[in-house]
Length: 189
Length: 189
DNA sequence: ACCTGAACACCGTTCAAGT
DNA sequence: ACCTGAACACCGTTCAAGT
Image (cartoon, rainbow over all chains, first blue to last red; front, side, top):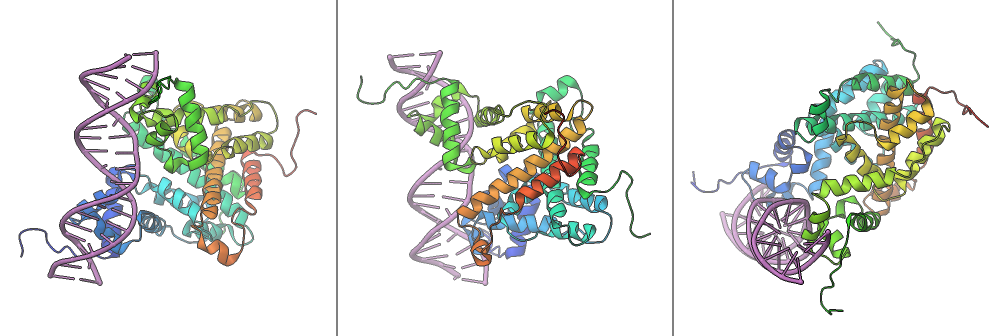
């Protein structure tokens, strides 16, 4: 039990877990390698043993956020909402997944979930849906935090909730792109 | 004509113009206040006489990028494409407008253009359309640059163009959300 | 009205060296 | 296998002072 600087051994998983928790506390803009290192009681350079660079760490966080999305044959609206909820589960989750998803070729977990709902032969619809969900959710989430941060002076002046009615926009977009009618069709049950 | 450090007087417009040109050269991630100042042959602190902070400068750039979008009663697909083209006109234009748009209450210029195409009583459709366009265009633009930057190793391996077929996804999404049929309806002409 | 100079509190990343 | 310590080349922002 040396009194100064404990060994503090970590692995990829513990670093990613600490980073994900910190993301939720401080947001993407303030999620620095140095902050993560401080949280782990480790020097910043120690992180580079586990991850090649910051982008690789962020990609791991995006993977963990989208990993919770269930892949089922539920209707599209249900799947779309579960993707949105997974992104909402962490501060700036949508923005992080959006920018990380852009760098990857091939399918993401969210795309797979959408294709499972839509059935095969509709990859274009699934892609359009994913782009809408990422755009809408990123906007909504950024706005949520800007509002609470006091940066939006007009919100207090107009006394309206800037996120009000956004859910109806979400449903409208999903239903339209999925090509289903107003009432949700249910394949089973 | 003093040989060392010229007076180099600037105003809000000249700073914004230099910043916009620099954005197109280096991208959003490398667009620093210090780089902009260097381009103007001025100390970084000089920029803070013209703009309160970096975010205010970025908002001005976003305004200039979207200002070129024509507000007409053309069909929705034409308007949507002109929005996309305005965002594509500058490197990382879509990402910049996306994050700046999120902070603003009220309507943006792009939203106004969409409402002019869709007609009144369809603000929700216009909002959903804008979210789709911003999401899709941001993704496409980020991917374009990741590809040319050599960060995408899989692209060379599979020898496919990662942006191929994205235009059809764009059209599919716009047509679906706008609620028009496969062939473009033309109100006039 | 517009800019300099210096400072403050930060960044991501590398790399030799330790254990 | 995992971390320290020091360094390098950067950030955004503030503020007194100059012209």
